[in-house]
Length: 368
Image 1 (cartoon, rainbow, N blue to C red):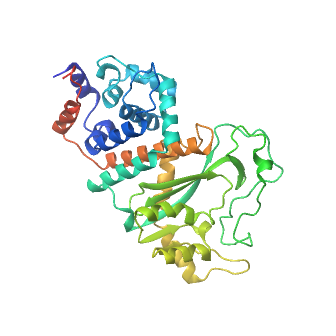
Image 2 (spheres, rainbow, N blue to C red):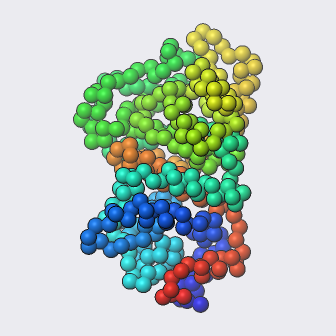
Image 3 (cartoon, helix red, strand yellow):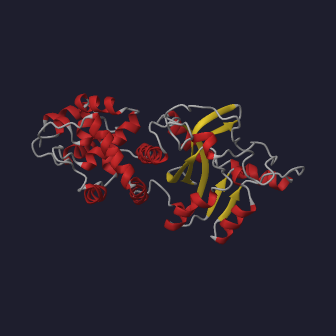
């Protein structure tokens, strides 16, 4: 048995996240796609790092909340990271990408918009392992705020206000209370894509993440990043369009921020069961039936709220690391993939024999 495998036997027990991920995921289709999409991106003089290994580096960053410099350092010192990525001791030439290489690779993924496809591929594999139900069984939609990576350079006189959380619709037309023109919010900003939003007593400068999860376990199915001041009520159709293109869920559950006749009609046209919580109109209270219905929906919506809590508490995705919607979306998709793999791994058990087989199966000829 090789030195690397023998060392890993003591460092990585059968509950190791990395072992379980290797057991669950067939990386070959993703590796092939990376080569096709990025084969022309290699610059002269660059070390030809394996693209799949670099993608795994980005996932490790999410699981451990590591910056590019800290990730480079970890690849020199952590033997489990070396085994998982194929860098360091697991590479014949002892190659380890530096922080600049990691950053450039991530920017390539931003440019090519490849991560949404990988999220779908991994979800499909998890479904085949019976660790995840298909989106056709039902979906939940929710939105959460992400602060911008850089602070605003100026505070506008008037800030768009998020919807009220009570049963009274004070917006009149069902939209935002206030809407600022673009030059009031972005003419002096470093991140011109970020916008202000008043949430409760807090003024937040950043983005809004709309996420769609399955209604059973809370796996990410789809996400969309917008400026923070984009209305939830007018975003439902846009968010769901990509989901419907793949598979239509039996029903959709949302909170009352999405309550409108237009959204209900959209669900009806697409044969999606209406799980939008009811919202009272001005001077009109909800009926007992509506209150009871809202209560029933709220009992299952904790699933998406748990997903949001995990991404914020475990992955630290309360603030973006990058500037611009495209890069923030890339970060969000990496978090989504890492979240889904972590959730699936937590539902998986390996025997000691399985663990050793997985450690040995990596095709690293000079070690084995």
